[in-house]
Amino acid sequence: MAEDYNYNSNLTLDEIVFENRNKEYGAYDLRTSHRKMLTKAFILGTVLFCIAAITPFVIMKIKQMNAKETTEVSANLIDILPEQEQIIEQPKDEPPPPPPPPKEEPKQEIIQNVVPEPVKAPKVETPPPPITKQLETTTGLINQEGVKTPTYTPPPPPPSTGTKTETVEVKPQVSETQVYTEVEQLAEFPGGINAFRSKVNSNFDTSVMSGDEGVVKSEVTFVVERDGSITDVKATGSNSTMNAEAVRTVKSIKNKWAPAKINGQAVRYRYRLPLTMQFE
Image 1: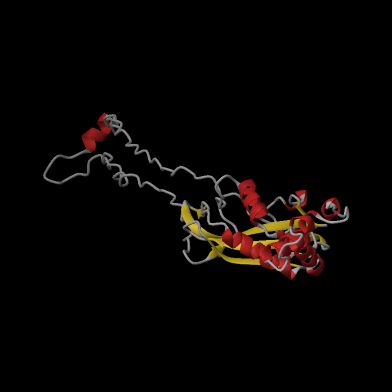
Image 2: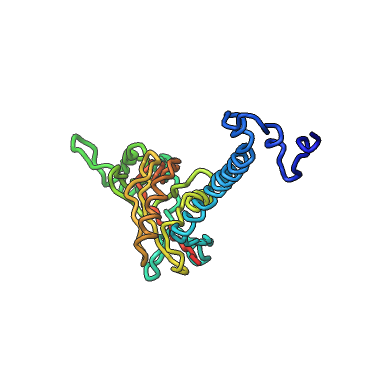
């Protein structure tokens, strides 16, 4: 009888519980396959988590491998060379225009009228004739010529009142449509030319250049209108890309200038601005 209750030590807990019972019941299958299914689920979940965590890094790496290489351009704008600081370039062969002559005060001619004082005619005393001559004279009705006395002649009338001569300076006529290159008062940017250069420096897009041009020079010319606006912007130089960007940069500056003047009147004035840039 005791032998019937001896258990094999190799039996599992499930086999001991379900011994002499219906093992076809679903509970026995669930208890025997529970650990295997739990292990498989853990492994599968771990694999899916690793794939989800690694996928963004793989996509980023692929994008970096397929991305085009970017070239960095380092452009340093340098100041205008000292010999180019003079904005208005005077021709070397022609001398500078002479300064306007000083304004002379109108001359007034003074004519002094001098009236001569009348002078009495000197009294001519004729001595009486001698007695012998007196005895020869005869008295009667015959007219005899006496001694003539000088007559007084009045001086000529003075000339008319003095005339006043004035010198009137004729100023040249100023045109409203002509573009001048020489004026009495230059056009001026608010804050001075250094403020204008600073705006050109900050608005210039250096990314349009390839970066290996070195020192590039260009001269920008534009017309400062009578109302202070800028028109007819042009650029000349060896590099067409820099010329186009210089024209765009100057046009983008919307600040108005103080116009140039001749005889106190605002005129159209052509301005020249040399630019020098270094690209490394």
